[in-house]
Image (tube, rainbow, N blue to C red; front, side, top):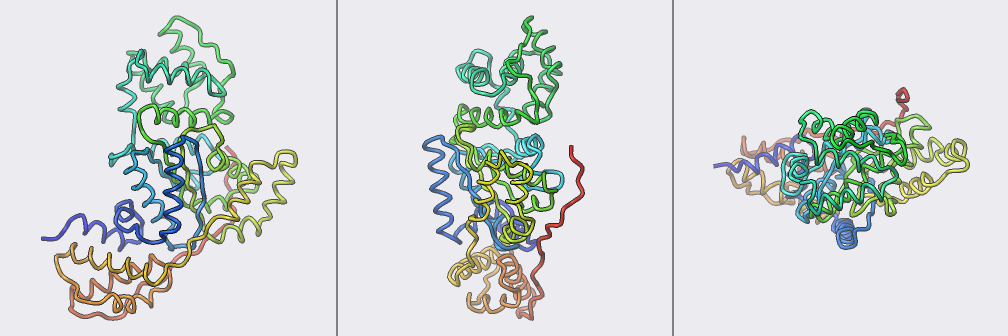
Length: 394
């Protein structure tokens, strides 16, 4: 009888599309980098002080695999995890859009589906957690919109209002006038903002509030994973600089967020092709001559980002042994072949980890089906392109 879980892992590896299931079982590689990541996450958990880091690597070398491994590690450590990939629809220069995407891809520990509103629905207006949240929203944020919104959410019995307020917390921001109307109906009082809320100016309030919320709900912190960060290189010049400024909110958050660990993964060629090739430091001096920080700090972090070192022969052997184990479990057979033989059979696939794994699976497929193997046909794919997209400003 075949092992369904192993079959799913093999099919994920065969497709070449990284998955969290694969990250759970293939986490032995690059122990030095993983040790640093674990140390930094533990420090965030212990102190509540937020931190961020960037990793870089060539296409297919395992960046997404590492993010998936961190996802599983964080969940095991009772941390909330959010994961997104940057794209044309999720550009780093639009912080409200980033917030919406992050919230819609947020997983509580032990849950297979995203979402956390079911936990908020259990809060009562007079609970200690609710009192702490209301005090934080009233005193610690740049605006007090979230105070009025949360107080209304906890007290309303109107399901349409509750849905609107919940949607706001999820990033579908409602207007100030509507929130004031709801607040007036519930409490017969006028909501008087200390600062009028604008999502483009004060979206950071929502990240700060969520980081506080997750800690108050008893979780050990919040891990935010951002893949394909190299797609910032396709933005226009000013949009790229704004994207770096937004990255600084996660990489150098100061006390804006509590207990948040953020990881960005981007192409190893980004520094040469975008930062140097598009003269980002000169662009920054031209567009923001008197306000180059924090974008300048982020550019330096991207230049210094640790690059994934090529896997050692021993690490590749460990991974191939795991592939062999899972293929055997997936199809209820015993591949009687040495790891050296598998390694030789995957050499034609190139040096990338992803193609080596796919070549190994093709090798085992042939051996399983025919009792012998031919030449593997897997070849290396993909090359980053950083030509700017013609995207209108929103």
